[in-house]
Image (cartoon, rainbow, N blue to C red; front, side, top):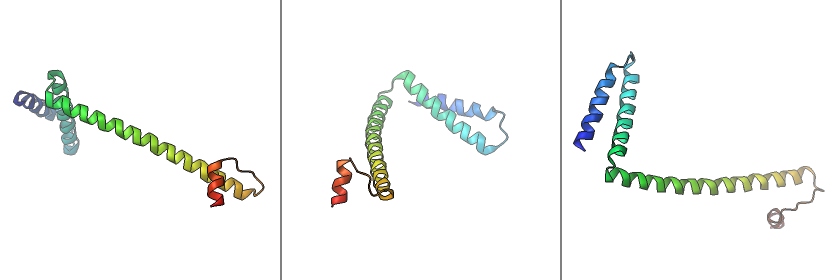
Length: 107
């Protein structure tokens, strides 16, 4: 671990020689170079703690994707529901074929 931190430190130190005149841009580039170097070195050496954190992050990402899919389905249903209600209001003689909309209108 100390070896990886040293290599990352050397990479960040050498980044100060990039031709950037703005100190904020130099700082941000050093931060990103440090992150990229450390992740790359951890992947190359297969450090167990890094592998464990990566698997936890992948599990969280999968659960977020599932929740996002559910949310999209709810939004799509809501949009269709609102569209069917507004179309029936503009033309009161329009028949509504969606049973969920009919049940809510009866309620």
